[in-house]
Image 1: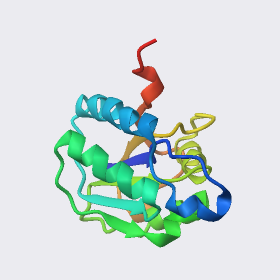
Image 2 (image 1 turned 90 degrees about the vertical axis):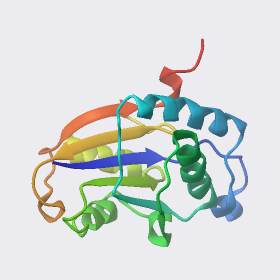
Image 3 (image 1 turned 135 degrees about the vertical axis):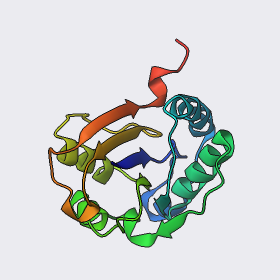
Image 4 (image 1 turned 30 degrees about the horizontal axis):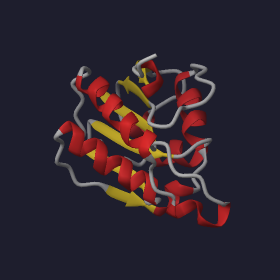
Length: 163
């Protein structure tokens, strides 16, 4: 079985669009990472490959999440993930080496919502910041097909915030 974990970066500071790439995560984003780390620990997840957008908020999200979870893993940063479309992400997934079993991808909206909905045929509406959508499927990454995956879970911080 292959597994893919799609994560949207944590909540970031607001700024004008010409500095979007350099936006850092904010205090709520840091709190949300702690909540989502606790939720992910319950799923006993593991990653063979971690690839993230190279935007500052994505880099910080991965670093803070892995620190919180006690994960020591190399992260590959992909510049193209910053402006990626769902189609690009789907095509990228098909190029992943089949020796890999579990992939963790950190991405941006709207592409992350679109790829999760496309690949699973589940309507999530909008991937919240710090949300994680996990799927599994049999076969090769190169043969992954729409609607032939099983959704493992959809975790997001709002589910765990105190009311």
